[in-house]
Amino acid sequence: MRFACLGSGSKGNAWLVERGTTRVLLDCGFGLREMAMRLIRLGIEPAAVTAILISHEHSDHARGAARFSAKYGCDVWLTAGSGMALENQGGLPERTRRVDSHTAFSVGDLEFQPFPVPHDAREPVQYVVSDGARRWGLLTDAGHVTEHMVAMLGDCDALALECNHDVDRLRRGGYPASLKTRILGRYGHLDNRAAAELLGRLVTTKLQHVVAAHLSEENNTPELARGALAGAMACEPDWIGVADQSQGIDWRTIV
Ligand SMILES: [Zn+2]
Ligand SMILES: [Zn+2]
Image 1: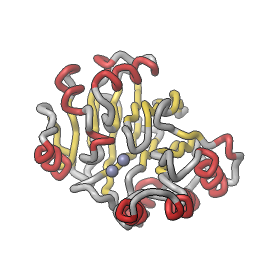
Image 2 (image 1 turned 60 degrees about the vertical axis):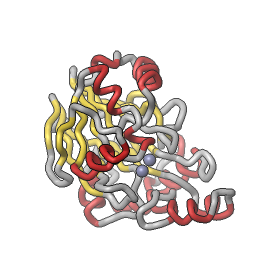
Image 3 (image 1 turned 90 degrees about the vertical axis):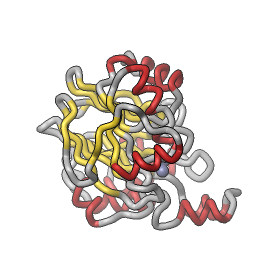
Image 4 (image 1 turned 180 degrees about the vertical axis):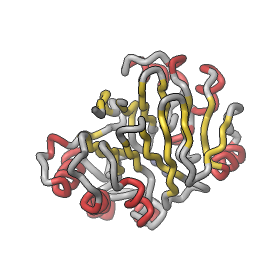
């Protein structure tokens, strides 16, 4: 199994996980042409995508799903709440499959275990992906860490964790007060320190990859995110990957 990121941050998010000929997009937060360009950059033809999973209805995660699914003929998996929210926004894809927030399901050769997260969306989930032997956990867009999240992410071989902001930078920065309150809130986004604390509670001995994700371009830097996660791992900061807005992150193979 291997995974890559097409881009991560408030302007758009999409991840790709592959095993054999099964290729699944986790989120589809770029427009049609941008999605195609970013997939081809990773060596994948858009028509080779098997399915799309949408974590929640925010446009930086769901923007491209309806058109991508229609053009390339793949199903879009989402929770009932995400589906209703997208319908209200006028962006519900035609080919949808229902996700129960606690029930694992298979797409091709991969298994997806959703888990609910506290975020200001209608029924958001994040995912642990398994090929039967290895597990990759993806967590972004969570306002705080729940015991359930710790349990779900506890036994992974690779992780991508939201490091949205540095709290001091966000507080000092130029965002409107209401936006600061939202991001800092219990249903906002994980900051570097919270992500590091989460990582510190997980079994890290078998982690082959740790990637910082959904970094704010205003209120964070790759160095700060790397430093926080490296502290929790007791590893060199360079070992921590960063999925950024423009380039995402290249393929990482989990062996
Ligand atoms: Zn987001
Ligand atoms: Zn969100």
